[in-house]
Length: 222
Image (cartoon, rainbow, N blue to C red; front, top):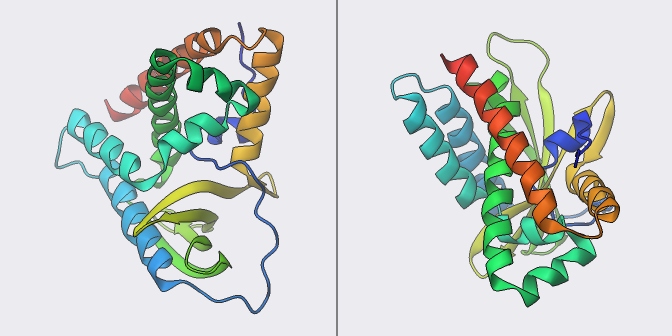
């Protein structure tokens, strides 16, 4: 099985909830708590990627831990399967295996794509509450090391109790704003549709992609 990965879809293993973010009300309130969450966790992740005072193994372990805390990985893993997620509810062993494989893939995507921004600065510039205190879009920009044009990034967060988690992200790719979760789901559903909904076949392909990304990351860090 071959999984077609476009540039946008390759990013999209990072995060997802499953709906495009609707245009916010121009007068909607900001949420300082959500803004602080993004500022703290995204900055820590970028700083870790650029930390040459620790070994590559330590960097990866720290980065993985930060991303597990930052993003709602179980929600994402279920979302990207769309209707095929019902299989996970019927098979706990499959669910556990899928969550593990997808999380490893997602974090590898994030590390691979953010590598060029390691050590860069992130600045939160705005936020909009879609649902007061519960559903927020935070706007930020990542400034590359050594200057250059800042990369705008938007983060969608949901709060469960007192805990915020990122559930979707948008980037400007080739001049277009793309909410990545939708693209990832589309790619996965296309693959599953060609394989009679075989999640284990999809997992095999994701393992190959993860291994390839890890090799690339290790080569750059050598």
